[in-house]
Every structure is written in C-alpha cells, then in structure tokens.
Amino acid sequence: MTINQAVLDELGFAKGQPPMTGGQFRKRVEAYLRREWHPLMREIDPAGFETWRASMLPTVAEAEANFAFNWQLAAYREASARLARYRLAEGRAEILEEQATGELDAEGQPITETIVLAPAIPPLPAEIEATAYDETGAPVGVEPIPNPAILTDDTERAAAQAVIDATPQPVLDFAAGLEG
Image (cartoon, rainbow, N blue to C red):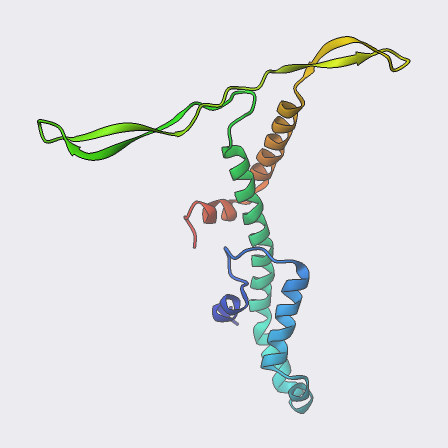
C-alpha cells in the first residue's frame, strides 16, 4: 500500500503547510470521505468501501504525521524568529548597507553611499528604580530592581531556545531546505 501524495496535497496535509487545528483536520478528512464514498455508496458496496478504506490507511497515517510535523515546524520558525531579535540587555548596533548611486568615479568604478537601514538601539539598563514600601504600605524611598523588560526578554528567549532544542531533526532539515 502506498501513500497518495495527491490527496495529501489536495487537502493541505503535506509537509510545510500552515498548521491546522484538530477540528480542521477532521473536517477535511470527513469532507473527502463523503466526496469519495458517499454514505449511500458505502451501504451499496461495503466490501469496496472497506478495500478503499484499507488502501487509504498509509495516506491517513502520513497525514497525521504531517499534522504534527507542521505544528513543530511552525513552533520552530516562531522560536527562531524570536531568537533572531536583539537582546534588550545588549541593544543592537546600527544596521548599514552600501548602495550604488548609479554614478561612476574618475576610474570608472561605481560610487557607493552608506545607507542607515536601522538605527542603533542602546541596551536597556540592567536595573531600574522602584518605589520601596514598608510593611504598612507607605513609600519609604526607592530601591534598584532587575529590569522587568530584560527579565521578560530573557525568559522568552529561553523558552524559544527550549523549543529549538526539542525540535526533531527532520523538522530542522526541512526548515533548512535540506528536505522537501
């Protein structure tokens, strides 16, 4: 028994498709089943239906595997995008690009100019000052606390790295364009 790739492609169950919910998956399978073997036809030819159903088991198994694969791929891409953003505690250097002006110098070489694609972003301070309160709730001054934006950023980055670390190799290969 073979996998029917045309059915997987038609129903959006191929690798690399946007992930769908379990309900969407089920509805597509049910609609395909109704179209291919209407309930009345199943009653008229139960043996034919069972033969067809058995022949579709490898395709269904592949669709289920691709369902999970596509969720893993989406999570990997989202985590990769999160890690690609600069760390708030480190900031980001100015992003520059050399672009040709369309003119040539005296030696016939193209003249270029430096264009700022994105300005530098300074790092956030590691600590901020917060109002300190006594046991009665009255303010008593300020105290340094870790910058909550940096803590959130680091927590999100750690979660993204955990997703990447848990991503199966076939998903990594697909994302890298090594498998298609």
